[in-house]
Image (tube, rainbow, N blue to C red; front, top):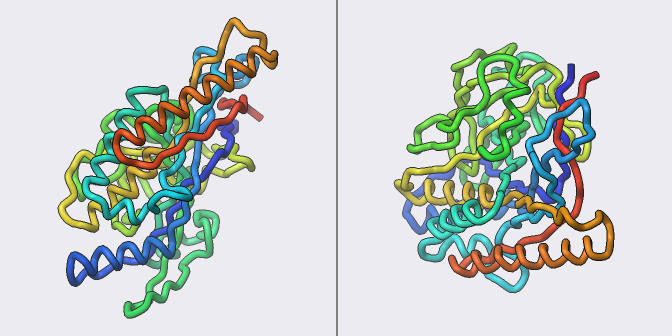
Length: 336
């Protein structure tokens, strides 16, 4: 039995953070963090598409009605406006990201999804004894030689992140332990672990309740395992992705206030990631699909929602834009 989740990639939010930065003064801390992130920061976007194929006999649908319009909330920062790092220096930037996140989720049927990965900052061969490269996005134990710091090794691990509203399908993929519950999507302190579901291959080296220390956005975090996926779980993401070697993380709400600049930068980058996803919109049920009226209604709806996103963005002095797609992908299961 193979469980297959179909998605269509619109954009990928990718931020590679490596190393632990030593801070000498608050200003120097900011410069060190910004410079490090600038070297490893690449912005694009990701989006999750859900099943509205009612003819898929092997599958199931998370969408109970038909939706044809998909609007992607894109990452802030584009030509002609201040860059991300420049905006991060402005007063109240983190709080404005949070407000934007809340209002978009309150205003629309929003689904969050990200391919942002975590990194293991020591010898990964001590974690898994064979096929270590299958768990990694890039070569295992890459040597990093930062200026004026000791060299270290890092392994980028295959990771996928789902917000609460887009994670229901995971229940049907769990082979051991449990899926995510509501409390897993809230992290209330900087030292609280992130609950994760691991690909089946990890079950050879870990058990339910084990913890793993990794790095996310230049910050050390702890993962606590609550479940393992079924063997041969797969994800269709342009090409077939083998989830046996993937860490599944919740996109959480960080409810604690940062204690220092490093924690604030972590939350800034986290909420920039959390703010990206898709908005699903009900189709015009009384219009014939692919007719002229259908496309005109579709275009009008896209313009309307894009304008709403930009209005919310301006309300909080941000620079978010919205792009759209008219694709009709689906999410489901298939047996083989």
